[in-house]
Amino acid sequence: MAHTVDHHDHAHSETLLGRAFFLIASFMVVEVIAGLLANSLTLLADAGHMFLDATALGLAWYAMRLSRRAGDSSLSYGYHRFQVLAAFINGLTLAVLVVWILVEAVTRIQTPEPMIPIPALIVASIGFAINLVAYRWLHGRHDNANVKAAALHVLGDLLGSAAAIIAAATVYLTGWTQADPLLALVIVVILARGAWRVVRDSGHILLEGVPKGLDLQDIRETLASEVPGVIEVHHVHAWALTAEKPLVTLHASVDERSDLQPIVERLKEVLFNRFGIDHSTIQVEHGPCPDD
Image (cartoon, rainbow, N blue to C red; front, side, top):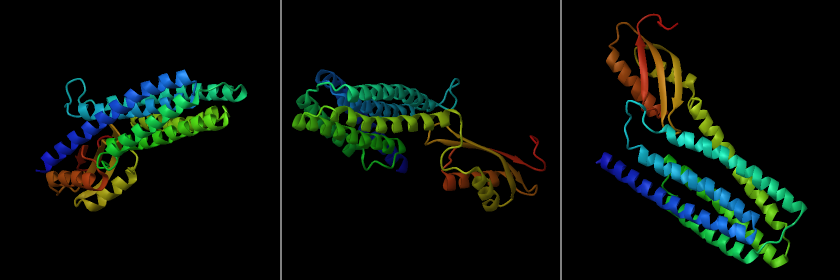
């Protein structure tokens, strides 16, 4: 029964991610065209933010689809790392977009350009509504880390759409065209923060860094103190396939009089219950470690 519920929840989350991805990706194209026609830098900047969101949603959705596929002789751990590599490339691409928007905003502050506010205001308002719909779809599905991260991306895009609305309304009511590049700078900050986090987090995983929230010393001490028969835990290495899939290898020195199978089972139980690690490779040893 539990497996059936989990499978249903996974399928429902995948469906919601797919809907949100196609909705936001489709409107992103509309927003780019409207931004070019209205000469609205804020609208184009918000389209850049939607690009980040659409990519994040697409990666999360595709990752859930790929997670059904088992490992093979070429990729023994499966296809999970694909989303990490794609996220890293996406973050670098977004960084280039941030530089372009920044240069264009500074240029327009120094030399103001006319903007057509009404189309920009209409499109930005529709974008806000679309992001609100997508957020309502994803909000509350926080049992899945992919969906939670996607919901946070969409929430950030709501701020970008709000900035575009304010810029267009200000130009329409006051004629002050510099409101457009100034508020574009606000979106640049949001985009730059998102790009940095994507590059930093995905790069950390690709470099096989210790997953966030895991303390190797805590793992050593916990296993040695809570598993009877374990004398010492050493050579602990932790990395992750994705942010949600941590892996660990370790050596455990055990009492020579102990039965090894129950000790290994208990070690894995503690790793899962205390640290959320469901895949571990454990080498048990009697006497000195052969790798020292």
